[in-house]
Image 1 (cartoon, rainbow, N blue to C red):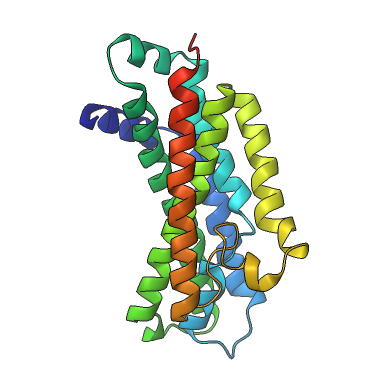
Image 2 (cartoon, rainbow, N blue to C red):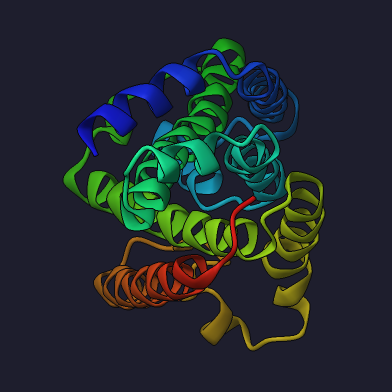
Length: 231
């Protein structure tokens, strides 16, 4: 699997769509911090507003689905299996790489927002706290859960275009629209709404839900992909 991870990392570095998405997210975050946020906030508050923002999660999901789905289009997955790699290692290597990519894209948005605010107003050290660090780790776990669902969709459909379409719709509905129809106290603990506050209860329940989604999604992906016909 190590060699597969090296190859996937190399492919990710050359994936132009990821860089385009990073530019879009950086610009969105920067101008949010520069033009939309009021002066009476501190850096920690700006961080908290952006770290739990799921407005652009559909873009991150699009990039993830495109990156993973491409290998069905160009027969890379078929060739790996033919070369003797297990199906488990095939999808795990891609999941790990895609999760890292998604986390970096979200952090691009978060730090661009902080930079935009700092350029116009100020920057203070309130952002550097243990609580915010733990909050960040929980959000990363939730992003991982989201991407595991994306990987299930892509590996179930085995087509890049269908995978992208279904993933974007799913992500947009779950992260942007669903909150209007589910109790806020319930919705904000799911991986579709990144942890909204840093209190211990919210972080603990959010982490547990995300971990459960990761296990269920990976298991489902493995079961579906293990029996799938790869052409």
